[in-house]
Image (tube, rainbow, N blue to C red; front, top):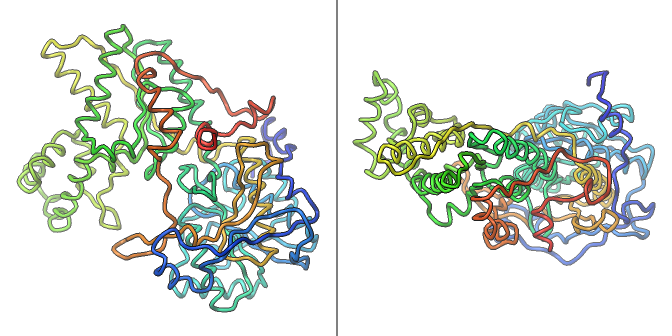
Amino acid sequence: MSAEISVLQKARAAYQPKLPKALRSNNVRVELGVPTEPAADKEQIKQRFPKTCGQPVATIIEGNGELNGNPLNVGVVLSGGQAPGGHNVIAGLFDALKAANPGNRLFGFLKGPGGIIKGKYKELTPEIIDRYRNTGGFDMIMSGRDKIEKPEELAACKQNFDSMNLHGLVIIGGDDSNTNAAILAEYLCKEECRTVVIGVPKTIDGDMKNEQIEASFGFDTACKTYSELIGNICRDSMSAVKYWHFVRLMGRAASHVTLECGLQTHPNVCLVSEEIQAKGTTLAEVVDYITDVVLKRAAAGKNYGVVIVPEGLPEFISDIKRMIDELSTILGKDEQYIRDLPDHSERVQYLNNRLTAASAKVYGSLPQDIQEVLLHRDSHGNVPLSQVETERLLIDLVSDKIRLLKSRGQTEAKFSSLSHFFGYEGRCAMPSNFDADYCYSLGYAATQLVRAGLTGYTVNVRNLTRPADEWVAGGTPVTMMLNMEVRKGKPVPVIKKALVDLEGKPFQHFSTNRERWALNDDFVFPGPVQYFGPSQIADVPTVTLKLEKG
């Protein structure tokens, strides 16, 4: 880490995250509820997880409990994409371990789950931990996207845990990583290994949540970071009065980030993938909707505005989805032949003769550079739809539509556009007070679950719209959240992603107000993440969470 740090980082290093009342106590115990069942596909989950399925929900409360007070060796790993607050989870783990017994030791596995398999780790000392308190990023021990699935990988992990005399492992990751934690916990139980496994819910996408887990960490900070930038762009659009800004945001499977940023900033157009899928909306209908807003604002003398879209939008548009499915089948047979054709026009002609008329029309409507992207397949054999720059695609198609209307004398609207993608800017931001507190509490609680000897759990902290003093920490059995899904042609257990609930209060609030936001300049300018000041400014949770919890 750089020897020189910013003035803000110096101030943030001194910030002491808030904890739930029970976790501040020297005497805590873990209270277990009634046995649980999987979310779906119960018999298949029970067959795959005979040792850990059916465990009870755990709640951490004040009082004398039978928590392990002997010296413990605990490991921690960061898995998957970065999210603000990861370092505070590790700091919470460390502080709770040392508070329980100064002889406890914490080891950080390096570069993600691959470090567990290879036995690459370092002991985390007070000097290391103190340098990273309340900072963004995962650079303390780095992250990776490896999975621990194959028999030889599971065996290698057990061998490393045995040699380290490891009592517990905390896996900080999203839905796939927490599912992986459950698989590892089940294997270790079967092998009668002493190491217990606890997961921590992380993802800026906000799609790892349910009745037990109110929010994944990092979502709060990332949305506030993006919303600051979107607010700045809204102000710029009103100042220059000549540009339409199209902003693509993180969120391939779910639109939580886009919806939350829409609620925070009130853009003129906010597209929610789940609604588009539910309505069977076509690409032409999406373009018509945006164009209609552009024309109505132009008629009012406003040739400017802001559009925000989730990165995964194309996968939810009905006719694009059908076209991609057809294209995949054709490429599966003729990919090399198509790519060997001498020019692009011949490739298009070849596809036009094999796609259905509707899909050929959709493919033909796309800009040439996007057509070219879709003629390749990734390592899994899928058309790389994620490489499509959705904001640029929409700009091109809306521009074409307006140009056509102008040629017919149906509008005089001016349409000048700028595109933006806000993604990595939010993943390693310095955590908000909410995420700093939440993550520290998650880490602190994870230590208590390890001390209680629980395994196959994801740590949770609930009651998040209340002051931190009233938060309630505990653990959710991962098997309780599992269902079976087909991945790469095989049924596998996974934690189901939480998509935007179209009947939920956050979307309903957006739906009620979007027409007004579309035509008026009702922009909100959240400004930068606030670390100091009144609690209602510095500690406020997301609009989504406040609406969900009433």
